Length: 184
Image 1 (tube, rainbow, N blue to C red):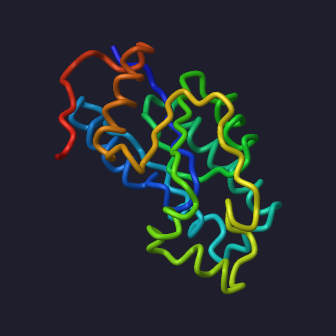
Image 2 (image 1 turned 90 degrees about the horizontal axis):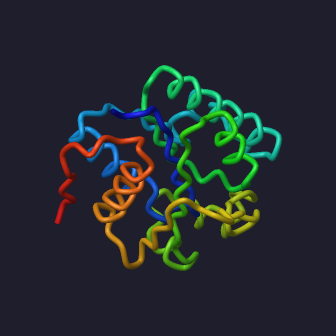
């Protein structure tokens, strides 16, 4: 039997959160679950169409994100938060609202994230187009006691997804049904 749960993938921008979320969603689908991915960039386009990324706006955004996730989980939908959530308070709010909550620290050095940066987040920060890039201009607060830690410099997205799946099974939130086969 599967219990509803949420997994928050947190890490610096371009650390690999979205790639892992894609693999994890696929793994959950193979296990018979249709998870909802709450991806921060997509939700920002709805909630704050012209984002300023101010502290006040981020506080509002992450409260809404945690609330949306909690409502989905309350209705039996597994949720994957694909969001930097640079302040621990944002993730702790979600944890307080969602009984089965798994925090996954996506670890990747800033220099590697900058190299992977397809969206131009860091380039914009260095060019002065942004003043609020987590890890660059504002502090990123990594989890103090993450449930799972993934170093994306040495772990593939498929392996990370399998590790998360194993943790969900160990906690009894996911049945021992079919095993996920990560992409090579």
